[in-house]
Image 1: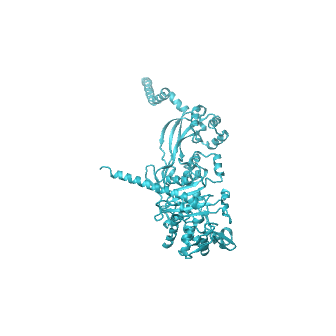
Image 2: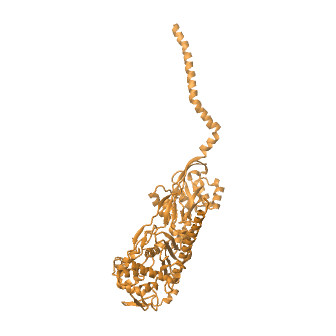
Image 3: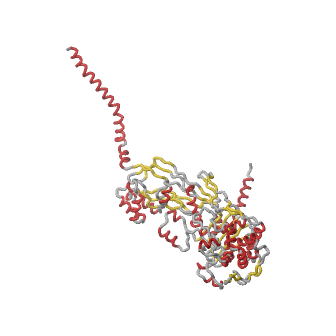
Length: 623
């Protein structure tokens, strides 16, 4: 009994100890939690409430700046500049429809079209919808001023492609445009709204130019406005592409051609580098960089002069008498004539029931192959063509690269036409007629070529080598390291006898050097030029050539001139065509090429003097 009473007295004491320890343990466990809650809800309660209710964290992609394009001397041809774009996040707007109406009104956009744009592109939550690119200062100010009426709308700074020389190099550099469905499917790293190369250099060298996008973790407020950047992965800009183009020479060729439709191509015959490539009319690639408007696109595509066509590689023209040096080389090589063979030209010749006229009504008298080239006698080549036949002429033309793509890295290059018996049978299911060979001999009939092909052909005549034309020298990383280089690629060698080469080259030199030569207007002081004129008919005039000046412009002849210089040690070859010219190749195209050559050698001399002066200044410095 006493033992039971003792146990009853000890029980409350043990219980009290356990309760005390439980309270201590409870305090140790929950006190930090209570302290944290007090810190967050009392000390920083207002700040946390704002972050929770008004702010969100977004992942924002930072577009990489496309690589710069420079000419062979480092002068900027294509660059990128910062621009403001308007973007809209529908999730940030309590009333997206009202915001879209307000935004359309401020930016002068069609509200129905803007609704469709947001609906089409805003499928994912918090996805930014690009509303308008490259805003003007007034549009930026309007959005900033009315920010409270535009929840979810923000301004985004993005690099925008800039073409400081406008139409000057448009056909070669090409342009950028918004990425399309095919590109998105082919490369998932692209996003809707990205700008990619669509033509020319921009398209062909997209891999090097595009760069690597970066990213930011951004805190925005309830209106979608950026507050601060929480973390960032820097973008990597694209590589620099250095062209073979000489910007000064390009501008000289552009000035020489002027407002006339046509093309001028200058190449280095020793390696295939394109020094200048002009096609007129042209277009401004800046319109595509900002997003071309429908009216602008319709104007370009509806223009009968076809400004989007690169005439240098897509324009097909009868080469006219510029083709004669190829026929002369074939005749000498095949032995159907020799340097002393003479033909009498009374002003034309009869063949079958047709009379084939020479361009000079009174004729050239008795001429050999040298004089036939110098004076561009058609009758001589009519008779030579009879002896050669069209298949032999075609075979030699292809040796010079005609009828074949040059291999230049530009899309939609056309191969031209070098006809032969098999070609006509395949094309028209008709046999070849002997009279057609006479037209081929003077670069007419079915024969067509591009200006770049003719530049390549005369370059091959100058050096005996044919290279793949290229317009990129090298690609340089943002740090300045060379990551890729375009090496000269020889495509063919001209397997002609030395005597044949000398005969043709001497004649081409006298085309310019002598008073009787048709290309004397291309003559330079102190530098020998070799070349060949050509006038290609667009419509037949019959007996009366005097009415040519009264024809509608689109029926007038094209004027050609191809040349290389210096004649004894060629370093530049040029082909020029003026469409529907008011005169022949010697009158219109030869002076044009002379201007280009004058500029080339003046630039060379000036740069040589500067280099000499720089070297002297380095040498004269005290040690």
